[in-house]
Length: 463
Image 1 (cartoon, rainbow, N blue to C red):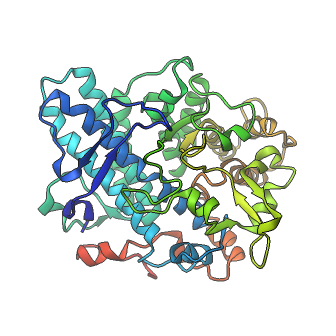
Image 2: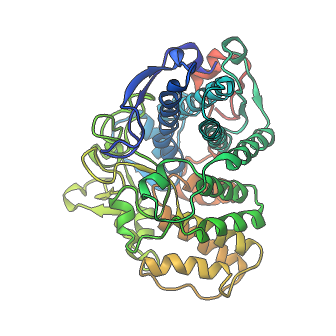
């Protein structure tokens, strides 16, 4: 059974930007079981609840994308991180459970809005359209992450408790069709943003047409619809709403940069960077990567980021000789700070990814050279990173260059495992990385607690 339905869950409604308030009214506490949407004044609190639920997916999604892959090695005593680092993942892993909970919490609040808001005729039409579009986008995003993490998953479209207790898994293709429908519906009614003159925090915090098009570009890349992926990435790049940071180090050390397309923020009183997430219970990224260093960058990743090809992107990690002992290589991830630092947010999409999506889509279509070729897109990022330019090569070589560039550019942004699986490279890369790797790890297990509570669910093979 999907546990957010049976148990009362606390959503802390906060300002979505680090150390500042970006949504009104002031932060309040709201129980999911007591969500109220009866009059216009209820819309903003429930909307904030939607964004807060959406935010709860972010940290466990980073853990799924990077801890499952070849970026980390276990370095502490936490069982969950030891399982991920040694590639012995089980259905009782806390991160596996935390991501599932975050996904379905977001879906629940989105469904609540989609059920109740259309009936509130006293809400201004523009407000109703925008909030409904935000709900459709976030439900689509959650289901997109869900199918690429767990495979076939339950499709939950209502808040009916009795109906939701025995929903079986549906085929991945059917779920992806519903994701596309949600994204397209959202795109129609999300507000337009026409230039970068709007505050960068607003552009990255609130949903708009351009960041919805960015999500669609990623969707089509995963679907291998190269033409659509290229087209939508180009729309985002050419929009002028987002701009590459001059220095890559700002991506590591600052929140809400000019190239952040979608970013979830935290404030001083509610920051999972240094403690467990108050909703999912998932350990914070700063706690795992910096404070306790339960996982550290793998030797392979360190070697990649220190290469000439990575350029200034080596600033993603830092070295301390005093920590180098035994199996500890002395390296630490710098990307996630504490609540008092200016880099404790989690970036879900940024402009550099759009260049990488377009480069891969163009390479897959044989568009390698020239101003509209894949190599030109890669060299935009290499120039920013002060790395040597790529010269012309065969299609297979350019695609491998794209894979390497995604490692340099997106390290610890939650994409590596998903990249390896979607490109069919997981078995080759991961079996060379760990003797414990098994093809079953191309999907995470369904959380054991869900299997026990919902008799309609079946476990993924091998778990």
